[in-house]
Length: 239
Image (cartoon, rainbow, N blue to C red; front, side, top):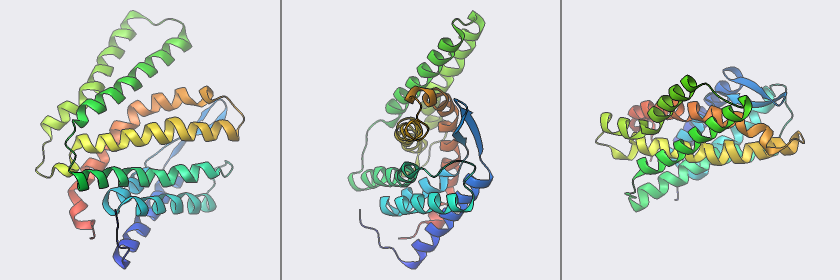
């Protein structure tokens, strides 16, 4: 897991930190949950994830932590500073780094598609339950349409893995999707929801439903973006 922090790696991590701050503080949208600014939709986590994948868990954690601290000082976005969010930001770089370290070191050959399908199925079921709970009952037409859309999302990992095959299997879509999904479940659904419930003295379930629904869209979207960027990884990866 050792990674030598030479000047080039530090510069690359600094650049990724800057990109993360700009994307988070200037090009993201905050959606209120329970009347509070509790859900940020954006792509500021992508550079942090890339830092962990390319340079290891420690570099990823440092990138995430510095991006969150500096970003808050530059633009708090109207909310209080939440120390737990800095921990989550650090994990946002550490988790991809440790997962990819394990994949590289042990040449893991598990079927990531099966795990991805399980995670996305849980999100789809959670989203449906939330919609049903809020509305009491749903029209049959809506249920059918939602079922078709959910099925497409569930089968997406297998379909894309077969369509977009690549010789460099290290950065295959199924692995990228696995990393983003694990990170979203731990960071966004669990930790950030917990930090928000403590900070605003609200119930955990007040913030969770909106994050579940957002995950059904944001997980595939962020995975697509990072997968597209893997084509240039070989130009920015520094040993």
